[in-house]
Length: 156
Length: 162
Image 1 (cartoon, rainbow over the protein chains, first blue to last red):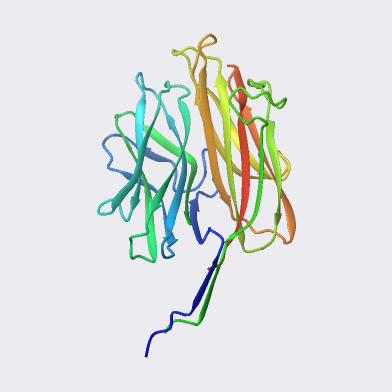
Image 2: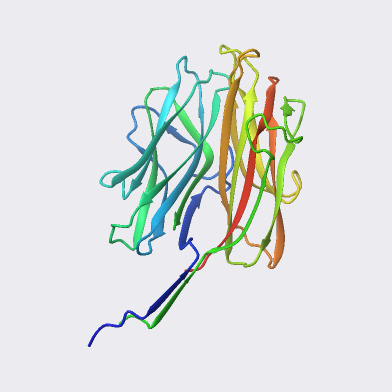
């Protein structure tokens, strides 16, 4: 007997949606996730993770915002953001970008970084994918993530 | 065996936005430039109202703001400002999001920067309802900052159902 494929109707483009935000998602948030302090001694530090349901023949639009403060640097301090499909220790790198701040001891630089990418998942066999957002620093100067942190995955 | 019929519906049930006209750097829209310093207080950049169709939904909020920092010189502390998104009126509504950004330029050689804001508001709401979100900015340094455009503020209602 043949297995019935039935009829499938898909209306619209946004099929699944997942997100992670701090609570409250504000500058100097009181969420216990923050502050997150990183220096070059740290390996990629996980800021957030989301798990997105994946429909057949679809892609995932990833969107992230993370804000940090840099104090006491004569030269700019860079942060490298990465988005991983799977855990950073063994997953696939799907996106990375760098941003920088240069503050002084008293005030520091506040930096609000936002970025977006598409993960083309058409050839994956997974029905759910967990994405990790990480940050790492290139200098010993402290970089403090204070909030907000927003990480969004939209399956289209 | 698979079921005979499978329906997958779009999760987007509402979309509202506000932009400058033209939505460009140094826009000629009369809403800009908006000069800021630490005496200006909190200024509303944009307000949008979205009809909410379901109690089981999220509101995905996104904004882009372009600004120019006219000081201080490199040896001074950066000039910073805090962007906020309020549900309801600024100051009396609910603060749902804020972030701080900064720049460091000179009066004759300013720094041009752009900030992108993203948040998902998942707080419970009555339904049906009209919810207003306001985007504001407040500078807290004496240095001069000008909001010059673009300004984009969007809200998307997304159903929270499998």
